Amino acid sequence: MVPTAPLAISIGDPAGVGPELIAQAWCQREAAGLAPFFASGGATVLAAAAKSRGLSMPLVTITDAAEVMEAFRHGLPVLGEHDAEYHPGEPDTQGALFAIASLTHAARWAVDGTAAAIVTGPIAKSHLARQGFTQPGQTEFVADACGIAHHDAVMMLAGQSLRTVPLTVHAALADVPRLITQDLIIRRVRIVAASLERDFGLESPRIAITGLNPHAGEDGRMGTEDRDVIAPAIAALRAEGLTVSGPHPADALFAAHERGKYDVAICMYHDQALIPIKTLDFDQGVNVTLGLPIIRTSPDHGTAFGIAGRGTASAGATIAAIRMAGACAGHRAARL
Image (cartoon, rainbow, N blue to C red):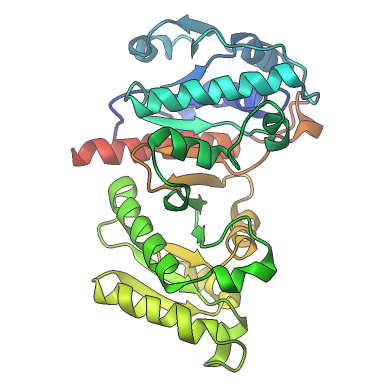
């Protein structure tokens, strides 16, 4: 499955590990089987980050994405003049403004078809917020760029052996029970099923849904949400012809002998979805946004300011995010 256009990568905060991991990904492009990609600005940042890691990575400044395919063989293509100084581990105003510019341009190129997908480098949301970044995170920023409501942009975490979707994301645990509704479950599962078919080539994805309470509530003895909210939603989805099972006790669903029985697990809250992914695939985890007209992936880690520039950060998740973006773009192209 080959994408019809190159992938665009936003650099993220230049003081974090993003720039050096993008450089490392280009250096491993052939061994990792990566589709051609280009960086959204940041020539100065990327050159310095590659040097800090001891990498031999030529940069090729381009003026049009049509140049990427040829340029990618000789160096990392960079499109756009937006740039910043490289101060690893020292986030500042200039770096935050650059991160916003890099993300803005990359998202625009994905939306207008210049890029087949966007891969977003890690940002520090608090630093960006002080510079006028109003969205809760990059997921919402990209959703706005696509004209999609935030609640229809669904976060999926994908590793080598597991995919999970948190039904509720950045919510206090005390608020989760009231946020879980049949409508929310049904709407999210429909988006997930359609996305797995379109972007991952799964014709009839198997979707497992966890319970909220211990032992999935034990028929109301440990909470009624599983019986009264989650189970009816599952029944409604099955009636639509979707392959959905549950509610499953979450303490057993992620065991090795269970993971092969489903393609994605829909979890009720943030940690229920992220703990198994980070346990199994910490250095390979990818954040994928489902439900968008474009493809967006991101490495499932933060800026890691504390180790930026030291050459110790693993590029595994960045490489996995680029590989997954290319594969998803290829699946979409094949369906046209």
